[in-house]
Image (cartoon, rainbow, N blue to C red; front, top):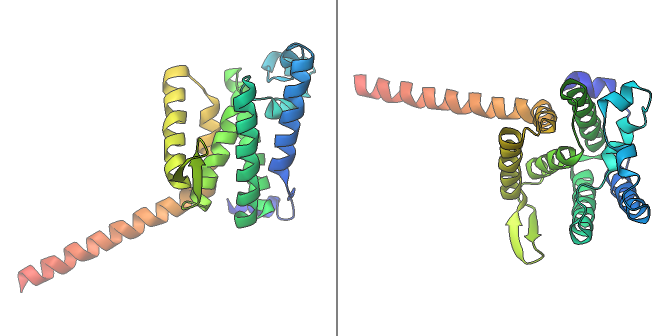
Length: 210
């Protein structure tokens, strides 16, 4: 994480998630107007990339993650909100680094396993949202308030199931990105709890010996 921060010390794209959401909306409209004709030209395809269609390395990130108009609108609104709040709390540089690393790892995974999409890039972003803003209230179906950390846990379970059941290998990149950014915090918490438990046990043993 420190190496990544040093390498991208001054690299930040304010409003990056907003740009991605806007591009995804445009891509969805263009796909509708062409009767689905552009979908096959912009998704990730290892063979096509190696044949020279390098634009796919970028364009797959803004392909709509759903084809239902209702869910497309909900998704765009959701990630616009997440991007705005996460950037306000975490900073544009961290959001940019997180998405960039997620993209790099997803592309690497795609070259290894031949197939990835952008779905888990955005789910991985939601994991970061739940970590940085755990108590932020979100309204499921615009009605039921649920804390972001609860939704992030549910998100992680869904991602894990998609990896196990559907072999959705892009989940690997999403989890790796989260682990690189936040893994050290969880390791520190685990070590502190273990030390606290050992201290309590040692203290109890001393009292028992007396």
